[in-house]
Length: 212
Ligand code: HPA
Image (cartoon, rainbow, N blue to C red; front, side, top):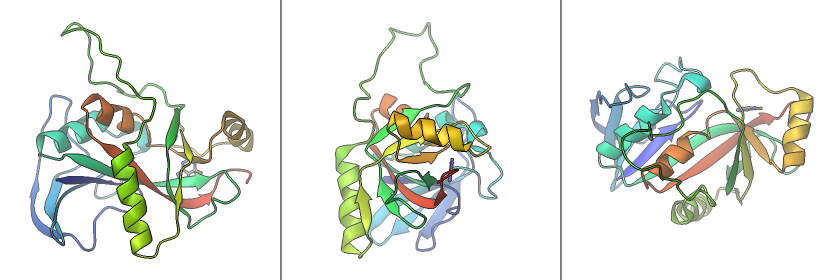
């Protein structure tokens, strides 16, 4: 089953044939809202709005652990994250659709692991390639099949928010190698990897990053 985490501007899926909604509790608290179960065509889908259905949860307060855990316990086997980002690289202006291939994490103070210590050996998950190759390819193939001009590969810098960056901060991110900037890429991707759930992101560039 496919899990979709909707970001800013995507609090519901227009073509989702909804079967039911479920309030799911997890050992990590409550997800951003009830999970919405349904079908798109012949694909079973579970949807959750990252910022809540009323878009009231800022990026640093999203319960990423509960969202990922709830999707996993609901039978989701792969996750597509939809996120709006700012464009840093010159060819990534507003309206561009991007499937990133790498992440740099600048966030802090977020609950970023399922490992709480004391309950088993420490595990260092491999995060060399933070996104799942097969889910990335699926996003690219499907986007192209419906005629979308999708860009394959970008380095996604995840900032803490909720404020936007300064121009100097964006300069630094660019020097670090970042192509796009958003506030929710991490710890979401890392948590999915900890649970061994294939995960990839479809990013919509909503604005030029500060100073660009
Ligand atoms: N910066 C950080 N996050 C964002 C931006 C941005 O410019 N646009 C959309 N999400």
